[in-house]
Length: 498
Image (tube, rainbow, N blue to C red; front, side, top):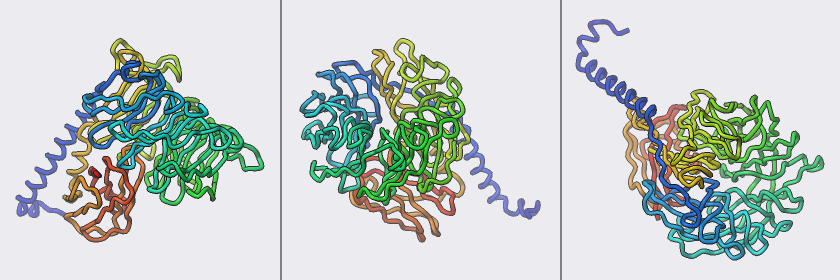
């Protein structure tokens, strides 16, 4: 026990501790104030032929520019690829889609291998059922890697590709042998195409699901994804499959009221659970947030969307910063419109255990407003969230926006139990060294990309030095979470360059 004499004789220590406590308290007040007054900024209004219209997916970042695509607009009114700086300057159209030769109407997001950007179009190409392409970040070097053809290799890809350093993996919403969609892989040079799975929806094949939505993610062993329909209840499924096409397992059948239905985004992982959303179903039939273990057990519904109070109809994926899950809904909120296609939507956050829901922003559709009906997901640079709306804004053709998070990260890094760390070099191109001020025992280092997906994990760390090798990670901004005994030691940024 601490008596009065102890406090008096250790006056200097007490004063130092008191100063630290006051500093942390002040920072907490500043953080709460920043959260309450966090700034929403519209970065760009899309405007038809000039810069494309109706973005439908996510942005990506290389640390300098944000890159994205629009479904329509541009010189040929078939969509565009663009880049823009986070402050709204430096906008450039990198490509105008044209139909047959370059495809049209991209509905997924771009990915990067550090040299090229890769993506897919829902239509266009030789058979007008979609393409796979790559292009340099400066707009040169466009190459069509594949023309989808329908029955043989699928049609209408709507998600994004996944790269493991050797193959690009993806899904088509339709086509394949059974017309219910496919899973495929292809090399970055356009060779080596392999169809890994034809989705099928009958009892003979255990109701695998149909019409896959979103994108695949990987834990290094399995690929994980969802279908928007099919399965035992015809409300969609969660599945996993090996990268060689073997080992397909249906992990979960959605069941409307109990667990949601019709997921249209992607899963994310924190290394223990998979997290996702459904566009409908749940207690109010307006969508859900859920988590499930990679083996199919432990399903938990974290949130039932209800309309005006917390939004409805999420069409994208979640983002994790290690403490909160962030997401958007395409409709609902205080300024709710006419439903899923003409709704307004919200930005929200929630803890991984389902507590702490906060509505961060209600989108608006008044004159010169900030946009409405976001159909994609958020990314973060640690200070701002970045995203797009598919409609609204000055021209009612969609917007790019950023949302300031406040000083939460600063407060976390000044926690009493956080050691000082250094990372050098940072940015790096091959490997970096993380040095801690304390000796670690059985710690874990997790590296996440801007979509909240775990891309690297180092376990059982002891000592004070950790080597972080790039391996096949593309250039860009990442976040490091260092934990010990299930307690976060620090969260910081990591930048990979070429």
